[in-house]
Image (cartoon, rainbow, N blue to C red; front, side):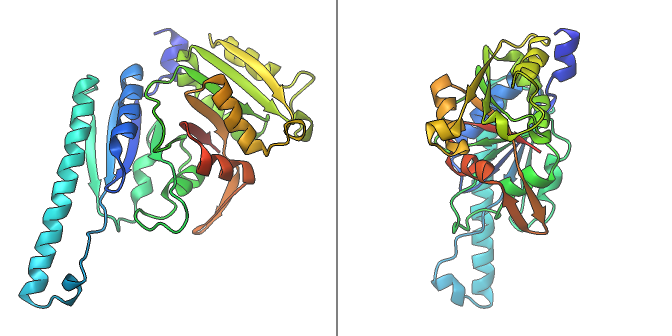
Length: 288
């Protein structure tokens, strides 16, 4: 590695999964990322709530004890299955022996702590509202409060290796942070496109929107081009335009700033961020 690559390298990757997620895709993605960067991989498993049958709700005394033991066995089997899958990923990708598996109860109040010291966090795309089969708002809360770059991985994604990256650039603090956080991946990518949408709506671009950040990346060896689009001209909302250009470019990763705020448990995202969170079909790295 060159000095610049060593400075930008990922050393610790945390991947969150739960007992309701088909974990093969997200674990393969995290494993490939860890292998490519020589990183330690930490799997954080959020135990699902046990399935309770109607008859079990009426259990009393020794019956309640049997139900409790049955649920504990059920969770242990689920945990063991996911742990085995994680172990297989670690072995196949030859990951560092310090890689580890952490299992947390569904009611744990300190889930976010496991993200604080990671170089990047991988987590499944938020499910549609109304679903209650995982801790509510975990992906959203990590994006807004962890201070770490979050890669959201959609269940429909087939991406395992990052080779082509689209950067959504608007010269604001969040997108500046996202580019810095994504630098290890950007430096290894085969092709990077900086996409500037409606540059006239945001100050700070300079005379040639996107040119300065492209030069900044090129000085670090990134193979980069720029593209300008107008949402008015394309008659598309900016979030959809980002996603459609990611598809056109054949991107394996979209890098963008996340815009929003958190007040206690009221997570509020801007329209573009919300669209991408809910509708992306490829991994998205978000920072704020």
